[in-house]
Image (cartoon, rainbow, N blue to C red):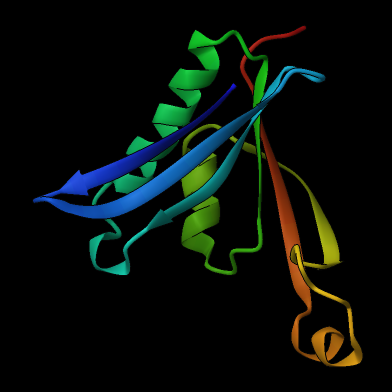
Length: 122
């Protein structure tokens, strides 16, 4: 239920994305999408996102979900252009491995945005 794709251009890795299936709720989580900053704006992220959606459809998942701490609006616009709907925000999100120490709470006030794309009803 999981997969990982790499975008290669002129022999260079320029982007990555992972998908992790969850059998319990029949969803796929889009994870770790990243495109080299020198290659952004060329449709690579959109192609990677579409690959995850294709994987979800081919494997009969009912929806695709993702979470992001991205502050750039371009990332949010990308998800929405792929059909994702913004479904909530978690304030003061702790990244995996954070201890929530006083220093981390002072410097890392993260907002975690959740998105969902319903492919079919269960």
